[in-house]
Length: 182
Image (cartoon, rainbow, N blue to C red; front, side):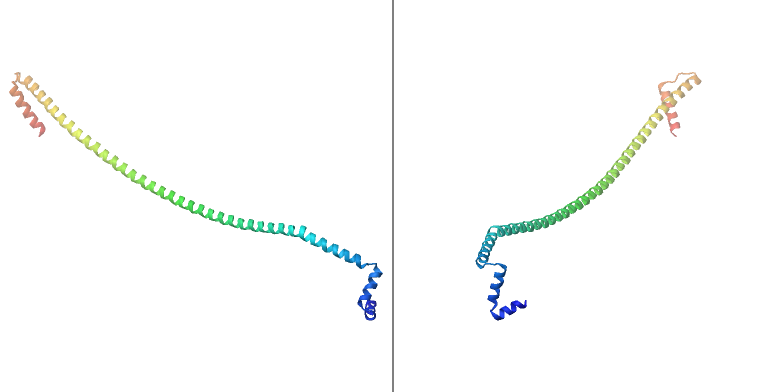
């Protein structure tokens, strides 16, 4: 290093560079042509390789950004759909419960109506049965009165030994019926 400073002070830096270049076998025209070739290769690479690669990378970056944005939209739509699903499910459960409650109420009302109808029909049957029993009782009483009257007439005829006239039979029958009714 000291040599470079010494050379710079005696002949200048330019002379020192020439000496170094000569010492290493560097030729300025070759170096200049290599620099120009390097610049041309760089320009060609820039134009035909780097720009297309950078544009492809930029397109990829944009597509990735779009995909991420779409993924976020899809997540948001999925969350909204899930919220709607839960809301619909909640409404459906509420309506189902309401229907069940209405069905229970309706069933209870129907049961009460059927019970009241059955009670009413049973009361009608009982009333008809009582009326039929009363009618049967009355019919049997009339029949009994007739039979008792006939027996009394037969007995009276046998005891008295005489044949009763229809007026006597009627009078005895009426007397017997009035005594039986009392």
